[in-house]
Amino acid sequence: MRAALIAVLLAAAPAARGGTPLALAERQVVTLEFDRPVARIAVTDPDLLALRAQGPRVKVAAARAGKAALEIAFEDGATVVYDVTVEAARRPAAIAPGAPGEMVLQLGEERRLRAPGVARVLLEENGVARVRSDGESVTVTGVSPGTTSLVLVDGAGARTTWAIRVR
Image (cartoon, rainbow, N blue to C red; front, side, top):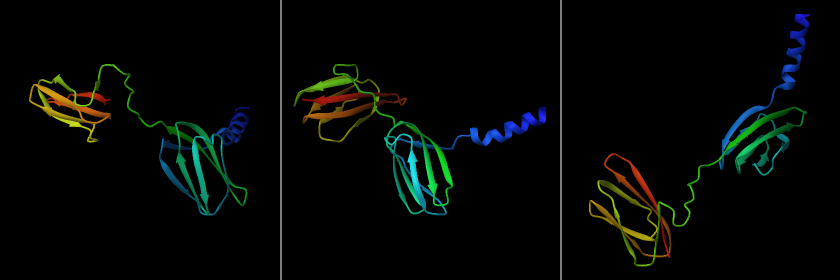
């Protein structure tokens, strides 16, 4: 009885097994290459992956985060199945207007920030603002409409980030 049960479980194991895992990051593109031309490709979530088959190659582009099954079939009827997992790209946290860490300036307006011990001042170079430091404080001036980022780094390496919006 025990041997018969083991035989049944072994016979069922390949059928229960999923596809080969394929882990991607959002916006990542990979090319799968096979030893013969691809006849057909199918995916359970067409919004997740952009697919293009050219001969023995399949170009897979991850469009958004999620999971899907990808099936690649060949002329002889053989198929390859992938369980695709796409991890989301990290995005900066949106800062609500007037929230801590946001500064709104008018054109030409200057704002002074206390910054004792500031070692480095990093400003996104896009012409929206100008920054100068005098050791104990940082002065930010609105130059042109738009948004930019300011990072203040102290001597210990701690960072303080500001989103600057100039109107």
